[in-house]
Amino acid sequence: MPFTAEMDALRACLPQRVAVSRAHAANGQVASYIPDLAKTPREALGISILDPSGNSASAGDSGLPFTMQSVSKVFTLILALMDRGEHIVFSKVGMEPSGDNFNSMLKLELVEPGIPFNPLINAGAIVISSLIKGDGPQKKSARILHFFRELAHNDALDYNLEEYRSESSTAFRNRSLAYFLKDNGVLKDDVEEVLDVYFHHCAVEISCPDLARMALVLACGGNDPISGQSLIPRRFVQIAKTFMVTCGMYNASGEFAIGVGLPAKSGVSGGIMTMVPGRYGIGVVGPALNRKGNSVAGVHLLETLSREFDWSLF
Ligand code: GLU
Image 1 (cartoon, rainbow, N blue to C red):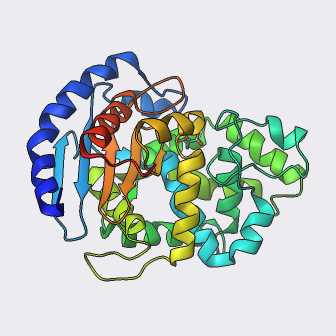
Image 2: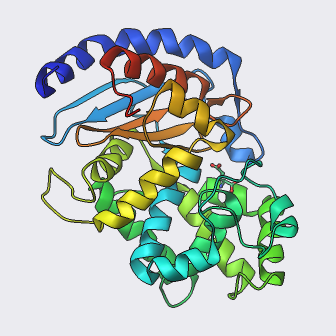
């Protein structure tokens, strides 16, 4: 289907597709290990789709603010690559799916040389936070926020400080991961300072149109087609998208590749960022998660749309 005709078809069908997928939220649970996240409405479901000409389609709770959580890891990886280059980044984190839970410590001890398997699991993303350039945690966080604002083309993006504090004061698991990494010699900096950068970027609050705009930059090889700005070197977009395919949807990345067939990253707040390369940036939110940690209704909606519009890359 030509571009604009497909966008018209999307605008027409999205409200009904969202209504059908929303019913699946009843099969999921809102994450509560970060206490503040438990307040999120379980039945919410929203989506925004944006094309390179700036045409968009949104439906459901697309305006619901939510924190980026693990979705932010894609962009901190890119910033670390821009700051330090591939060689340094991949001497500290691997390139393979771990097969373990996102916050697992298991392989850090069992598999030499004790570096995280990839940059999208928590251990890997904590190491990535330590690689962001900046004089101290505040400057590093400020650079990350500036980068996110640039990608979303939205200067109003900011932290949800309640959620930041809620995570920071209860993150015993992430603290143990970070101290373990310090003991392994992978983390050189002060552990609490590194974690502060990590908790801050997880707590950046966005909504579906922001996420769609950020995803569109990835869909267009690092260029923002709407502003004409070149924001990310193509090679780093390629690396990020590859990780999204292999490890972006936790231990359901294979299932998502088969069911939807697009690079994607999800987070515990129920966000999913995905894209149809060259065509669309897509942001989804649906806080009820399945047992693998992905938005139940969000995945259902993306499966439906991918099949209907033949989006799978495979
Ligand atoms: N801030 C969350 C954590 O570290 C992010 C996890 C996620 O979204 O997968 O637990």
